[in-house]
Image (cartoon, rainbow, N blue to C red; front, side, top):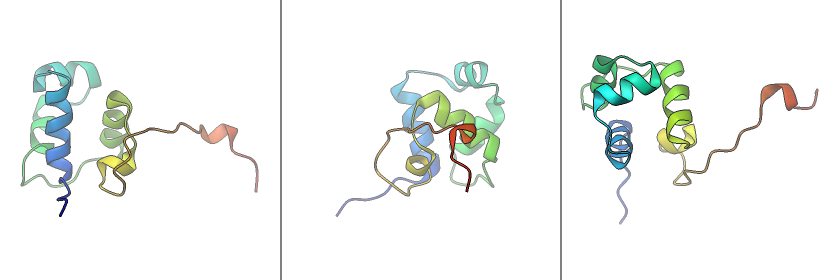
Length: 86
């Protein structure tokens, strides 16, 4: 049986895959080191929408993957301005 990783586990794994410290990630994303550290712990409160967007863009993964909705890491970019009018 495959076990899903939590958001905090995924964030830590992604950072380690890139070989970054929390400070280096903070400098590259503009998210505070303290917030990033909190996001990687079991007792974090909430990750802001802005932080999710920043982190998924930085890592090049989909927000669905980070949120555990899909195993597919591939990020598809469809700018809102390019969507057809309904």
